Amino acid sequence: MSQDTPFPTSAAVRHPAGRNADPLIEVDGLNLWYGDKHALIDVDFDVYPNEVIAFIGPSGCGKTTALKSLNRMHDGTRGVRIEGRITMDGRDIHDRLVDPPLHRRRFGWVAQKPNPFTSTIFENVAYGARIHGLTRSRADLTEHVETCLRRAHLWDEVKDDLHRKSGTDLSGGQQQRLCIARALGTMPDILLMDEPTGSIDPVATARVEDLMLDLKADHSIVVVTHSMMQARRVADRVAYFHLGRLLELGPTETVFTNAAKPEARSFIEGRFG
Ligand SMILES: Nc1ncnc2c1ncn2[C@@H]1O[C@H](COP(=O)(O)OP(=O)(O)O)[C@@H](O)[C@H]1O
Ligand SMILES: [Mg+2]
Image (cartoon, rainbow, N blue to C red; front, side):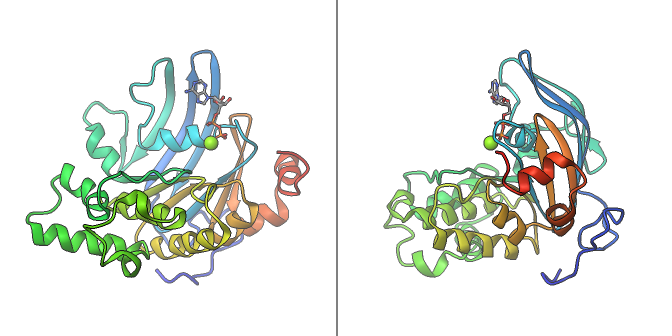
């Protein structure tokens, strides 16, 4: 899909790129409790192929919690209770026939603080393919690592140091692109990014934003961001979370210029949060 495909401004047209694609994920009536804390309340949204959807809203309003629900990262967390339905490929992701590691493999996770392994650059990226047995030979793996590093816009900077340098020897911005390359390593459909530029400098941030726009040719991206400018630059659609509810979801320009909910308007105008 070309990146300059215009997306409609009418919320009634549901696919942001204006194509007749089915959603990759459908979230229906999602509720989540941490013990007594009702952290997600009746949350509904879809994720389409090849879109960037940004989660915005004040802190503590459920953005990370919603992101983690998609790849079942709450599994095994004590006291978490989930109700509602998340469907992927027509199947409830909590269905007992769904294998959690296989499900999780379809997602790449990128955290706020770059968290590369201390192993070599090569091993950082090879990790996912190795544990899931995605490549058949050493040559395959080598090629896969190169592809992931190229797609993360990092190859040229590290190609001579793949086996020499550790992931942690890189600059902060490079580390974050390495983490993106690592996330691509399992050949995911969806990238989940939780404030991916929250701890890197503006130049490094611009590079990650460029990268996101490139990556949506092959992936969907759900990104939590504190930066309204970033949401505006990278997102096709924006979801505004408020006290555990998803209050507003629509094409980026519509949400930024003409949000229906007063809370969303106030937040976007910088009156709180
Ligand atoms: N592991 C947890 N145990 C208990 N409460 C949690 C946990 N994680 C998050 N919360 C609470 O759930 C709410 C939503 O948190 P979170 O999804 O992290 O918000 P956001 O990402 O929007 O800042 C907050 O009130 C937070 O304190
Ligand atoms: Mg968060």
